[in-house]
Image (cartoon, rainbow over all chains, first blue to last red; front, side, top):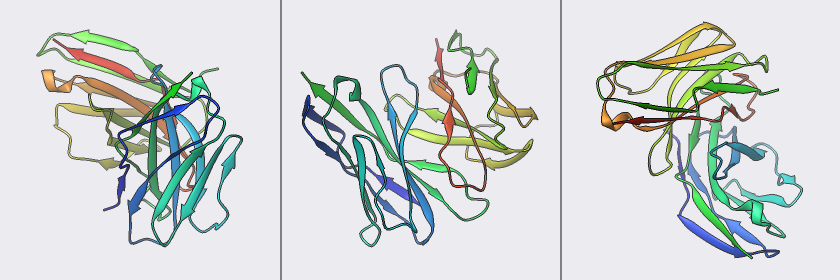
Length: 116
Length: 113
């Protein structure tokens, strides 16, 4: 079974600075998808970024980018120019590309605090 | 327009009661899910339906019974509620075979007293 590990329960960053959240995963599959979700205090789960394992290019969405290292099974999220609205729980998630294995497996999350 | 809507958003009830949470999606997705988020924020899948067919049934007490009348709706009924059932329950939807992330509802905070 696949597992996702987020080793940083909490992180903090100064407004306008850059922060990197770590995620590692364990799988024997070669084709899969990885995601970062944001959960602000409002509780809503918001998709931040998606990475396809067969693409070597790292995904980018505005101030959010990932460092995907397939051999190391690592998938970190970099937030540039941090804003107060980035304060939230961030969850890393794995989804198999194998047919019939569509469930998202989540890490335990990292709580990000943004200091003004 | 809300893409995945859950009702109610908050639910406070006494132990032993039976309650239901409803979920509807208007995204045309073929698969819907129920996730439970515990007090430590850990998200774990409970059930998944694809076109009204149950395809994922994790180790969940049989007091929890999902029902999908059509592919746009997935409800969760809980019998004989216990204190340990207190959590946030999320409904989500996606296309089964396209590798996209899920779209989540806003969650239902269930408190059993």
